[in-house]
Length: 260
Image (cartoon, rainbow, N blue to C red; front, side, top):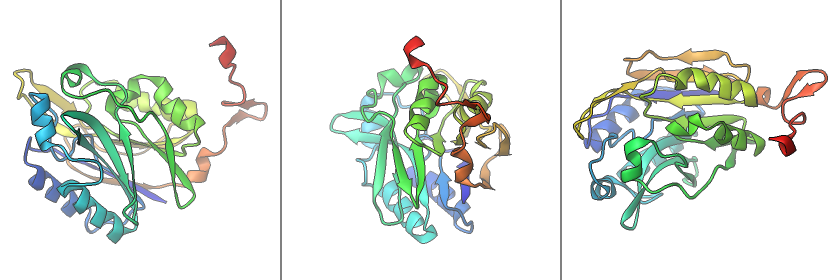
């Protein structure tokens, strides 16, 4: 299975331009799974809830969904992307996984970061897995990484690959995802962005460093802190099935949650 990501540098509010850039960048590539960053087509720093709602889409609708639905069908692949999900007069920071048959799965960000709390509503979907050609995938978004329970819940639900759309500004996440992969024996695909935004008067510097990581905690492929580009790796999802670290130790069977 070939898993891929695209690390972009979106211009805030230029949805069609940002979408064109991402779709054109992967058009000539072959992959089975593509992960795009959090809020990849809109940009990150919304000033108000109303602005996020105006630029948002309902799940399974809108220009971004339609373009990526076509991409998913043409590539016969799963496409995961982050977007502001309009839900009446409130907005969720969400990710959508589109399958080639146009069906989709929606995840709403559980752990909101800093100023997001003034824009987005806390997610209500919880963590779950879905299946594509017998492979089990899960989604989490950006700051969810800081809570080990996020990846653990997905792994306990059977996830072999965790898709992780992100807009990272804290320096710790790229290395923390090595730990998340290792402690759960799963593949992780963190798709981040680069560049700066300062719409709120507080400049944010996004750190890039998108990575594909193996269940053994090995970095299979990575991009730099300023790179815009495509990244992919060939993996065997079945490698995430073996939870043993010695003949006598299994990272799930040895858990003793009654003491945690």
